[in-house]
Length: 293
Image 1: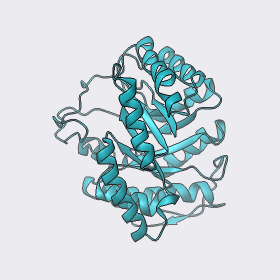
Image 2: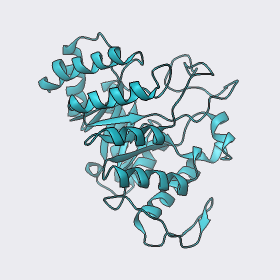
Image 3: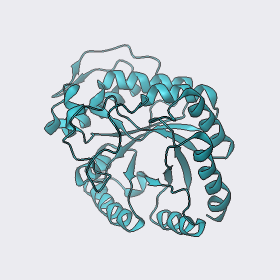
Image 4: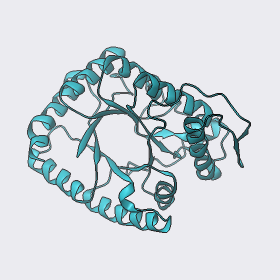
């Protein structure tokens, strides 16, 4: 099982010094990846329900600094050598897919083979519609966007003709170092699971217990069979909270349960505070939990 860490991309810790210090320390501790979340803006008067908090409200003030994820990962790429660089989750409707493909391919060209594109359709209507994407059609729009990105990465002269995007042959370079970039589809909904089965190289769940993960993975495997692919061809990953003071034995039990379900990569997210506080939590996991797995 691999383990990644969530970068401090929002709040007071979202600075150059903290970001670089954190990434370098995570690499030295042997973590496998660092990940960045995605919000371009935080609109005033958000009515959309935030799916990962019982209150349904995004727990961030409107003026919270929130770093753009691909720019942040480019900074980290230049300061590290081994860490994979992932998005959890890049909201597809925030960017035209040719531009997103170019940014991801450039990052992968400069950090060869290290990029993982965790992508999703997003939940915030106000932010998505700001960029001109109809909220009710964001799923179909995003499906086509994934196809556009793959065309840009893999074809000599990419061209596309669909419902949302049409363009003739393009010169697109540089292309990803290994010919393409793995796409992990984020989300726990039935639509997200079908999307992962049809279009994903992997699935990326968010804030599920081991029991909840078991039920979702079973539905995901059924979706794979319906899509005509073997479930084993899909990389399973999940983003989980890492409390600063949770007993190591409980964390070991949780990770073992996820491994038994076939989860390959766990993204650990701790509370964003200061550099020393965040690093201490990940140091404890590296020293007390990972050796027992």
